[in-house]
Image (cartoon, rainbow, N blue to C red; front, side):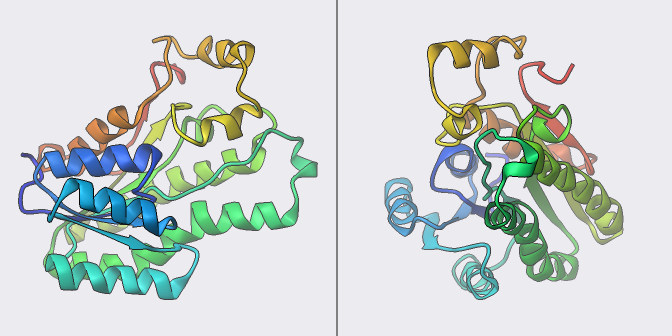
Length: 248
């Protein structure tokens, strides 16, 4: 129960890594707002997990939605102790010059600007309280890029740098900022990164992971719960690779 008494927001919390983080947070005693573009999935998950959760439709590319999410969290949970910026997207492998400008803009809005939007509203709340933990979703793609995913790789490199910069700026305010860098995982985004899901392509991806398996939502939940708990009170500015050794 490392998160007992804590109130958290998890964006993109109704599926994939986000759902793993939500489930672990609840198991650790936190009250959690499950913010997701898929309102049905967010609501269903909240109903499954019980009264310590609130599911809501949130488009993190929309400033009004983000403001609504923050206000609803304060009203229902009494404050915000933890913010997990998990919502994001990738793109199918293709040469960097072929990605459409619309797709690039979508990646920018979801993977980069959403963190700006949430931080702009949540950081003042945490500063006033004198404590808080922010966790950003990076990727091994920002550390050891794969070819033909250049603009996704670049967006995650930005997340890692932003995390370090936020951490050093906010340390004196009692706010810690970290990131986790997953390797390819058993989530709906896996097929996007691989282009197609075949045994041959899976084998190629797995060959680059020394531990020999894809990451799971449970892996991310465990890492996130630690970094957002008081057990990690001396840890800030870290981008923790949860990658089975891929980046060694």
